[in-house]
Amino acid sequence: MLLWGCLFIVLDVLLWPESRAASLPLQMDSVIQILAQLEQEESILQLTAPGLLLMSGSANNFSQHLLFSGVPSPMQLKLDFLSPELQALATSLIPHGVDSGQEHGVVLAPDGSTVAVEPLLAGLEVGLRGRRSIPISLEFIASPSEVIAAHKKEGPTLAPQVSMTLQDDGNISPDPTILPTVQTNSSTDVDNLLAVTLTKALGVAFLPGPGTHTPKGLGPDGCWDQISAPKTFSLLYSEAPSALTVAFLHGALDGALLGDYLSRHPKPSPPLSHLLAQYYGAGVEGDPQFRSNFRRDNGASLISQESLVQQIEGSLLLLQELEPSNSQLKNLSQDQLAEVATQAAKEFTEAFLECPAILPRCRWQAAPYRGTPKMLKLPLGFLYVHHTYEPNQPCTSFSQCAADMRSMQRFHQDIRGWDDIGYSFVAGADGYVYEGRGWRWVGAHTLGHNSLGFGVSIIGNYTATLPAARVLSTVRDSLPRCALRAGYLRPDYTVQGHRQLVRTECPGDALYRQISTWPHFGPPPQPAGPGTLSAVVFPRRRRKA
Ligand SMILES: *[C@@H]1O[C@H](CO)[C@@H](O)[C@H](O)[C@H]1NC(C)=O
Ligand SMILES: *[C@@H]1O[C@H](CO)[C@@H](O)[C@H](O)[C@H]1NC(C)=O
Ligand SMILES: *[C@@H]1O[C@H](CO)[C@@H](O)[C@H](O)[C@H]1NC(C)=O
Ligand SMILES: *[C@@H]1O[C@H](CO)[C@@H](O)[C@H](O)[C@H]1NC(C)=O
Image 1 (cartoon, rainbow, N blue to C red):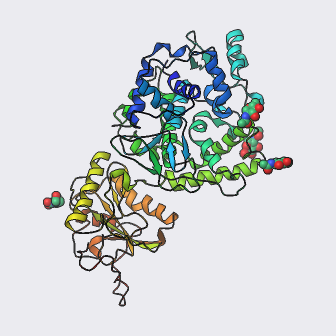
Image 2: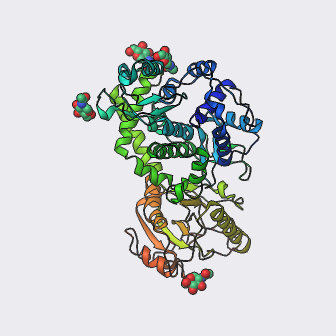
Image 3: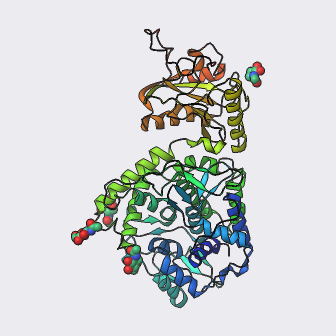
C-alpha cells in the first residue's frame, strides 16, 4: 500500500490547491513522518473516481503518463488519518516551484543540503511501481485504462510495453512474464525513472524561453530563514529564476538514486520512511557511500553524460507528443531538441554533477562580515592549500563541520581581529565544501597573497596523516576544475602550500608532501619587482594571516 503514499500527497494537493501554511518545520524528518504515517494506513488504496478525475484534469500530461498510467479506478481520497499538521505540510511540499525569490516544496536534510520533495517522491513512486523503458512514439502506447482492461479481460498480450500486472488488491506490480513486444530504436526509449526525476526538467530548463533565445539553465542554491526550524527558503539570487535550482537537482538525483535502488531491491520493498532515514543519515543498509552526502558521485555512476543526452532528448520528444500545445516545444525539430539535450547534459554534468557540493555561508550560520569586503579581480592564478590544525580532527557530519566553521570564524573575528573567517573555502570530510569568503571576496589566509589566490583549507591536522582520498581529490581536481570552468581561476593556475609563502608549518608535512605531487603544484614565486606582492588587504592595525 505504501506505493500510494507518494501519489496520495499529489492528489491531496489537487484537492486543496490553495496553499496552507505548514506548521511543521520544513525538514526531511517531517517528510519521513508523513511517509511513516501513510505506510501504516491500509485505507489508502481506496481512492475514488473524483480523485482520478482531478488527477486527469490537473496533473500535466507528462507525469500523468509516466507516473500514473495504470492507476486503477475508482479511487477514494482520504487524508483524515494524517494529523492536521502533517496534512498542511503535505500540501505545502508539492508542487516544487520558484516564485519572487523564494523556492517552494523544499526541505532541509540532515546533511545540510536542501532537497525538493516532488522529484524525490516521483523517483520513489517509479521505484516502487516499476521502472520501465518507454518508446517515444505514442502510437505504441495504450492508454492506462486500456492496459488495465486488457489485463483483466485477455491477459497480458495487448500490453506491449507496460510490464505490470494488476493484483487482486488493486496493487500493480512489475510482471516479469510480460516483455515488451514492440522494438523501437533503443536510443530513443525513455527511462521513466530518469524522465520523472531529472531529464524532462533538465530539457525544459534548456529550451529557448518564450520570446527569448536564452535558456534559463541551472539555478542557484538558497538560504533558510533559520536552520533549527526552517520555514522559508530564499534563493541566493533571483534574476531570471530557473526551476532547476540546486535543491531541485538534489531532489531529482536522490529520487533517481533511490528509485533505482528500489527497482533493483527484491520485493517487498523496505518501508520508505526507513529508507529515507538511512539515506539522509548514516547510509542505506549501513553503506556510508550510499547516502545523500555523496549524491553527485553516485549520480555520476548511475548515468553517463552520453546516455543523459539521449534521455533528455527522449524526454523532450515524449513531452512534445504528450503536450502538443506546449508553446516552448511547438516548432522545434528533433535536431533542435538534440542540440538542447546536448547542452543541458553538458552543463548539468560539468557544472553540477562533477563539481564539489558547496554549502553556502548561511547554511553553517556564519556571522556577518565585519566591515566592507574587498572584491577580487577574477580570474586568479593561485590556489593556496592549508590545514586548519585546530580543529585537529576531520569533521564527518554537517552539524560537526558547521560547528567547526562557526568556531573558526569566531576565532578569526574575535581573537585575530579579522573581518571574517580567513579562508575562501574549507573542505570537510562529510562530502561537502563550506563557503568561507567565497569566490568573489578577498580572504585572509596567505599573508601578502590574499588578492592573488583562493585559500582552501582542509579541516584537520595533517602533520603526520593525510586527509581522506575523497577530500584530496576535491581540492586537487574538482574544485579547481569547476572554478576554472566558471571563470574564477586561470587555466594556468598554480597550487601552493601555505608554507611556501609564509613562515609556517601549514599545511602540515604529510599534506605538503602530497600536494607537491599534484599536477598544478608550483614553486614559490620568484622575488618580484616592488609592488607585485604588496597587495594590502586589511587595515594596518590588524594582524594578518
Ligand atoms: C537507431 O538509431 C541509430 C543512431 O541514432 C541510427 O543510426 C539507426 O538507423 C536507428 N535505427 C532505426 C531502426 O531507426
Ligand atoms: C494533453 O493531452 C491532451 C490529449 O492528448 C491534449 O489535448 C492536450 O493539449 C495536452 N496538454 C498539453 C498541455 O499539451
Ligand atoms: C509555429 O509554426 C507555425 C507555422 O509553421 C506558426 O503559425 C506558429 O506561429 C509557430 N509558433 C511559434 C510559437 O513559433
Ligand atoms: C598535530 O599532529 C602532530 C603529529 O601527530 C602532533 O604532534 C601535534 O600535537 C598535533 N597538533 C594538534 C594541535 O593536535
